[in-house]
Image (cartoon, rainbow, N blue to C red; front, side):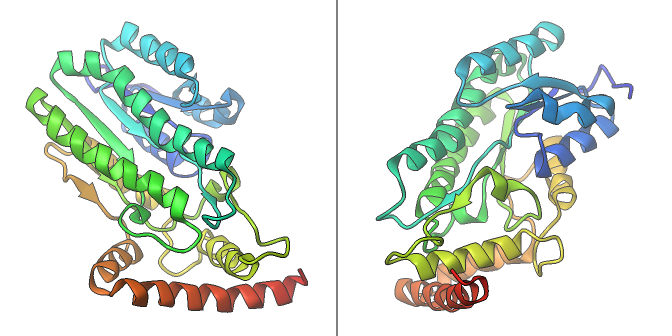
Length: 289
């Protein structure tokens, strides 16, 4: 597929499936020089056939970041649009989640994202034009049982995104964050729900999270958006002349964010714990765990 050389070069992380893959297809379809990246190049073959350039980037491997950005800058001068999409999610009770899993989520969702951004900024700032789109989560605005660590990484991203937006706009660079709710994708395969398969104090709770989260990732689930639907919002944020600071695709995303602002803390806690416990008992009974 031919690309328009006048359009900015686009770099997207985490394109092996889901939102990243859908977004890469949308950009290349519209003529943008599109660089799709993932930890494994083999997962990008379909995008390559569609006209995307493919790059191996593991956001926890800073050398792979520098090499990929250098490749784009040598051809285009700078990355014109960076979409920080790569992320993992591991759900677990705060008492029992392994510290190694905590570190792994922060390495990908926070440190890797910042390293990716820092790598493109010098040339982008020098060009006095560019966009950075950070894919956050509605969970960056509230916390639910079992999601403390994953949602903490999204809270961190919310803070970094706001600082970046203020720091970079004087240079002609726009920063936006996408905060979707559930997306029907393979995102769950990159993470896990811990603690529901073995006996323990949080087994019922984590079983409920396993049941609810797996159902929410199905395309037919109420309120769940497809990767293609979210990709359209991200594309708009990346290409609009003056984008919004934040985009919250879907009713569920907005509803949960605003409900959290209204409800007292303990009422919010009770609402989630009661529902997840109920769902957990059903899950354990049906699966004979």
